Length: 294
Image: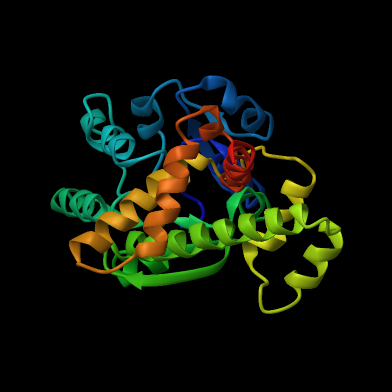
């Protein structure tokens, strides 16, 4: 399988690093992005840059996606200028985007009818995991399709799990995002408490990170906050989108999610401003605004 040509669409914070790791793995990678400038660094690494989705689809055997939302995935695959309408010979699509489980199931069913395999394979690990090839990959689809995709997955992630049928990858990502968002909010409140209490933030982080309060958020996001670095490893607006997906699923199952619902409201307030384009750890900016307003 490794000899096949791979197409990669979506060269944002995550996608660009993932495509770069596939190039390092020796794959022939063709890339496309709506903003062509984002493909320049990959072209310098050896990627072949396509000028359209259709022209990329004509050149590759497998297609990988890492785009914003359900609509973007649907347009790329089924839209008037998308993959299927191009009449290409693609037989496998791996979707690393975070979308609703119901959309993933619909896309998988539509593709199965025309003989194209589909894996919904959202990832976790942020910009650091994408760069270092240590992402967690939660893949939904057939066991056969999952096994055939491992040659790709092993260059992108460290923890690679087949979660079940199509849609189960997105359901697992819902669980992930609910926990991450609550951890970010908890970290934010802890840091604000430490700061306003006059504690040394570096020492405080060193202590609490090594104890029961330790979390991925504390290890990876808290040092950025202390350094006043609010650049996105994962956009706040994308966290809000993911929380909406997860809470819609919880609501459909009539499941209580009071803490997650509160965190969603915090991100909703944050994303009404330009802070939507900051990292999701910049939630502390909203807390600081609330502190000033008291």
